Image (cartoon, rainbow, N blue to C red; front, side, top):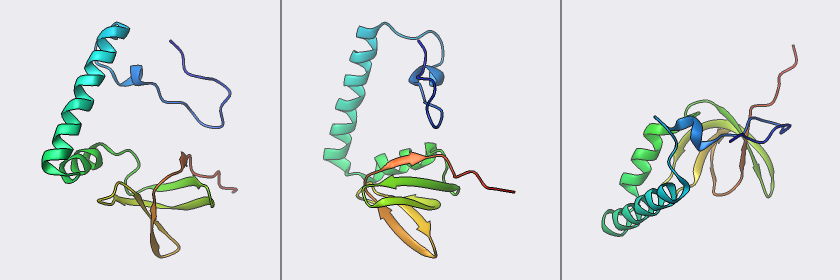
Length: 112
């Protein structure tokens, strides 16, 4: 399987993060369903905090510059946190901004 080509930034593929051979489609869907069921039970029983903590342990780009394309426009800043509602916290122009929805873009190219 290949990732789309010709995009403005690289596409991620789940296959790139697998250890070993990829599962058959049915096995993949069953494993994904089991994981979603586990997370739903965890959220119902413990709230979002443990899911948030695990997500932050694996978050790519934490402490680094990010660009987020939001419905209101592109916001640039440093990825600082994920709040308890799941919004990404971006420090931009000295302010912490909660970004609830948007597309994460690669940092803008800098001219030399």
